[in-house]
Structures are given as C-alpha cells and as structure tokens.
Length: 115
Length: 112
Image (cartoon, rainbow over all chains, first blue to last red):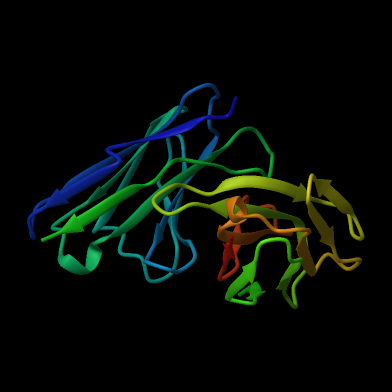
C-alpha cells in the first residue's frame, strides 16, 4: 500500500514553455502533498506544501508564480513550471501523507530538462 | 530554522565492512526517518523512529534515535554492494507541520 506515482517520469522542453507534472496517490487519500526538487548529488529541498482544496504554502525563496501548484482532489496534485528556463532543470519529487501521520510516501520523481 | 547535518557525505568501503552514518541537529524532532534513494528514483522509507533512545533493526541495518530526539545513527553491518545508494535522514519538526527536514545525504559505495 501507500503508492505514489508521478507523470511524466522525464520531460524535455524548450526554454519559455510550461511543463505540468502530476502526482497521484494510488491507494490512499492524501491529506497533504509535498513538492521537492533535487539537484545532482544533493539532498531534497522542499518547495511547497499542498493541501486539498486550499492554496499551497511555499518555502522561502520559491517563486509561487513560477511553480504553480494545484491540489484539486485528495489523490492528485500538479506542479506546473511556467516559462521554464535551463536553471529549472532538476529532479522533481512529490510525496504524500495520509491522515495525521509523519510518514511521507514518495513518488518516483520527474526529471525535467529545459533546453 | 531547523537543520539536520549528516555525516559523512561520502563513504566508499569494501564489501563486508561495517559503517555508521550520523544525523545531528540542535533541534528536537517528533520523529526521524531514514530513506534510501537510488539514482533517478524517489526515496524509499527504511524506518521511522519516534521515541528517544529507540533502536530498530532491519536485517543488517540498525537505527538509533538519540535520547533527546536530536540525533540519529544508521549502522550497517557487513555491507554488501546492494547497499550502495544515497542515504537520507529526515526529521519531523515538533511543530506538527507535517513537513520533513532532510539531511544533506550520505552517498555510500560498497565495492565488491
């Protein structure tokens, strides 16, 4: 149980375009989802916390107008990277929690490459 | 801001050796989790420790949570090449925000 999927697993786009990444909890309802980015050989950095039906809470230094998060249902959150630039190239990972637990279940990640 | 310092950052050992990874903070965490991540994949949860002084064993892996719930260690006995990967500790702050604070990670390479 507690499976989280992400789509797509990798994407290559041109600079200036927007890219949407989906995060789904497959066998549970996620009260909260989190979005992280990870640069090569580095740890995960939290970008934002997303609760179903409400606005996402962004970490300091993360541009909310650039990284649009929509959490429309208890099983789906989306991250849209708007007007992507090469410096946005990274590994984006989502996670989800159920209820009031501390355990986060992670998706497999999406590798974004902006040319 | 709560920080988790992980050490060492990189470890290269021979198959069969033992190793310990440390995760330290000046802050108290309500729980601490250890993850292992393979290249190009998301982190996979290994264990969650909640109680100060708690010790959990997962086959050749032993996890310990400090008495004050500020630090943790991961000890691997008789490491195998299959243990190679990025090990991440992550603490849940005591403010019940459900966020996780990740350590900087330890990249382990076990040579056959």
